[in-house]
Length: 556
Ligand code: FAD
Image 1 (cartoon, rainbow, N blue to C red):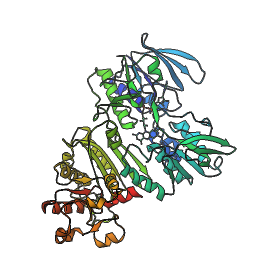
Image 2: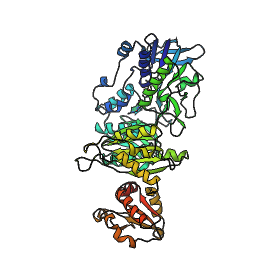
Image 3: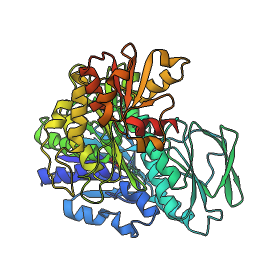
Image 4: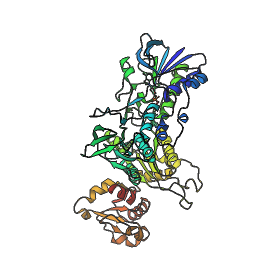
């Protein structure tokens, strides 16, 4: 058998290695149009920021070492320009001598990745505008980071997604003043506003200029700098620009060969990762696949799923279609200066857009027992189905222990599990690592209380809308149950303070004919207070989700 692979990085190289491990007698040819194969694209921003100092550490394999270990005919600087499914051949251009030739295959694997989106704006062709996708892009950016090309030490990053934010941090680390321009009203549109607000706060603390709801409209190169014009009328002079507004699946080859392209714009594959042609498989950033939770097809641009797909794809090619790909819930994580922020599953924005009913809750637990030094507060937001409690989305931001909590939630979510299961996860506990009630269990308990109507949550934006109406006090009573000391540092205007521990004494002073909105610092004491009032006969009692911490953050 002869297997031909297009693309030699995350998906392509993994598929090649697995194919060889399963079939020692086959012929494998891997084409890569770039110079490098099997490199760590996820590490590229950290090489620019000098956290990773040696380029060789990013190059996990060279074409020679990979070829030797796996007996693969690795052809770099070789671009596959066409697929001819009828003759089972591909056309290949040798990018060194520009000669074109044909190569036959029995089975073809497409892992051509995605291309950065570059909008057609005036001045976009400037050599001072960079996208970051591969080692070559990284080297070009790194040259500009050096003092030779950068006089102002200023950079504009357009797009506040995961890669944009990683670049912000790394460029800041090398001494640049960074302006971050984002079209949406928040950074990281894959997370919900209260989580994004924590990231925005951190960016400001790190002296990053964050410009939301702002678009770059044109670029003008001026001698040794570039001027970026923005939709708000402002102009920023910078040494260079990083454009990270997203990627699109690389489907040209597949489209030209008549392979089916799906609704989300990626190469269509079945559950065995086979395209509409049975001898051609595809994987990685270039494909689309139904989301396991919403069943709506989408393109997932993550390394873990690409690696998983590569293994499944190779297994199915060699052993017959037996292994099914289940899809990815897009579990992603990023470091943004002192914070770690991550998400899995569906955001509120996505749920609303697709008319999927959901409930949401925000908690702010500590990374480990607070009596053991160094505990750090994190914020967890979960979205879940109103009836079944199925976990639909989880987002966490914090300084410590975010990754393991996100992984715990992702593992429940990817199995179609519910919030009830979060409380059931057995976790490793000793005071330096967690609490007897882990943050994940805690989020589960809160959701369970909501689902069983032991507490009715109110979200920060619902409260905001109530308080913006004239005469809201006629209908509502806003109750702050924090301590007098906490209240001294600020409270929501119009609230009455009865600390939770004294609340039973003041029950008679609370109007029975009004809806009671309770808040504390993060939601726990609010829940206790709401239980006191409900059991004292109050019928319409709400607890502010995420408490004053979330509300105050969102109002600033
Ligand atoms: P790639 O790894 O991009 O490989 C595709 C290859 O195909 C490219 O090298 C391309 O040159 C080659 N190719 C395309 N067309 C042809 C052709 N016609 N002929 C020959 N060769 C061709 N994911 C995470 O999960 N976590 C992270 O932290 C993370 N960080 C990232 C940081 C950066 C800067 C980038 C760029 C990506 C990051 N990703 C991360 C995403 C992850 O790298 C991708 O999801 C993954 O590499 C996809 O694998 P792939 O094989 O589909 O595509």
